[in-house]
Amino acid sequence: MAEPINVHYSASGKSFTAVAINTAAKAGEWIKSKLGAYTTLGTKTSPADLVTEIDKGSEKLIKNLIMTHFPEHSFLGEEGVEPGPLASAQALESVRDADYLWIVDPIDGTTNFVHGFPFFSVSIALAFKGEVIVGVVYDPSRDELFVAEKGKGAYLRGKPIHVSSEAALAESLLATGFPTDPVAALPVNMRGLTAVLPRVRNIRNGGSAALHLAYIAAGRLSGFWEINLNAWDLAAGSLLVQEAGGRVTDTTGQEYHLGVRNIVATSGGIHGELIDVLKQAEATGME
Ligand code: IPD
Ligand code: CA
Ligand code: CA
Image 1 (spheres, helix red, strand yellow):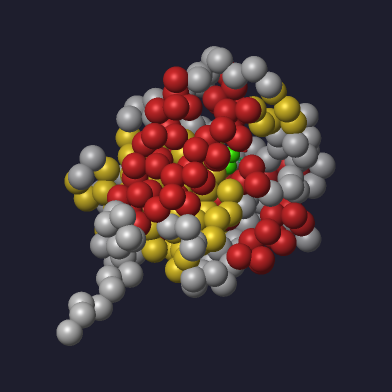
Image 2 (cartoon, rainbow, N blue to C red; image 1 turned 90 degrees about the horizontal axis):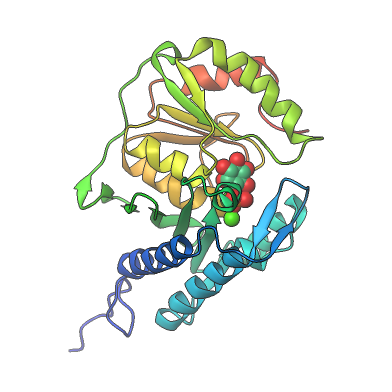
């Protein structure tokens, strides 16, 4: 009798995770080789929302590699979607229930990339029927590749990683992001910042949501929140945090899913306290 087909392997024999890792590593190396060498700088939703031809080239490279291995899978990449929250939501809706969906941010941290600030990443996730099952975040500046598989843990350089153990905001190091939309999102973020900062050890804005999440998974940050993000910023990093023992919800405490835009991710013990502070400050998102 014929062996049943193992869904984790393609015709080429490569597992989903192996393809995600190889693709992120290749794209990351290419991006790094282009540091300081982009030629076209464009803007999207605001003068601070940047895009270069390297973002687009990275996404093309990633899509080509993934589609070579898994031509029947669906693909959602930031650069293939019109800018703006409405278009992002529609793009996600059109592929959300696909059996296999790859969700890609080809450079998370474009502003850093443009300025040569070495904190940016490639984020690649694979979802099965809407649930993230593989998440890879690669930081080419440090050659750190964070990888998680649903139910199998999170790893950095082959070693399991775990979230940190802070039990109170007062002993926590958090991260957030400053929105590029100065009209609607920034005032909400500033309310959150003003409320959270006096209660924690400190707050960082490294400039890559995906790397912030990977750093929670690695125990380097206690938590992260940001409003108005997209599936490609969050999908891979969310699985990393969960598989490293942490918690990921929206800013009101609802469990993470691909449609979440306002995120709270923590090592666990401070999760409720952080959400309470954001709620009290009316900083959970935009109406
Ligand atoms: C951005 C980064 C940044 C976050 C922004 C994102 P991009 O992604 O993740 O840290 O604060 O909200 O848009 O545009 O560099 O892919
Ligand atoms: Ca991003
Ligand atoms: Ca990006």
